Length: 202
Image (cartoon, rainbow, N blue to C red; front, side, top):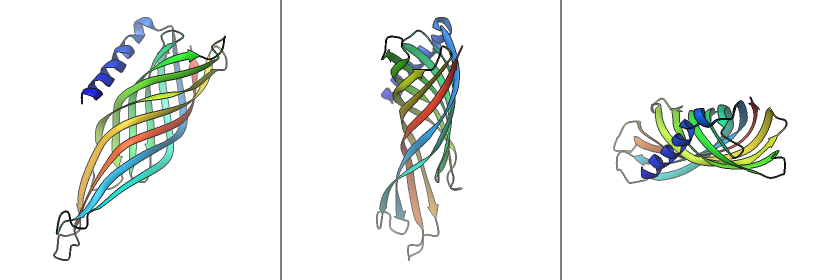
């Protein structure tokens, strides 16, 4: 909890300073791939702990995102992102606040490397009717390369890691002496995103 609080506080502090410090605003969108890692177990209700089976699965699907933010100067930017991802287990909608530090890789700063932190809220909607939708805090970081096509348009490829804490459980069947009933517990451990975006700066 302490780590989550510090991550959120750091990102929000920089984000709230944007209106007074910003030199250039930007809007943009992107598409990519998101990998979600699920962990869990299935246990027979007739004898908890007996025939328990643990599992770990990864789902890979398309990611869509829209974002808007501001460049505070040549080396710092803050932005908010809405993203959507759906796989065989869940649908996710995220509202994230991010900060990046940019390092110019050439004399004209057309190529930049960026690294930063992200915190926000993720709405998880499981496909299984037994599980309910939940809002959960997420946090992590991102890095990547940005290229300024001209003074107004830039494109970038980035990687983002998000730590998640979504957990759900459900019971199925009837707990009979033959052990037909069972309980499933599952959690969304983390998500990894690889994306390509285009931004318009004004």
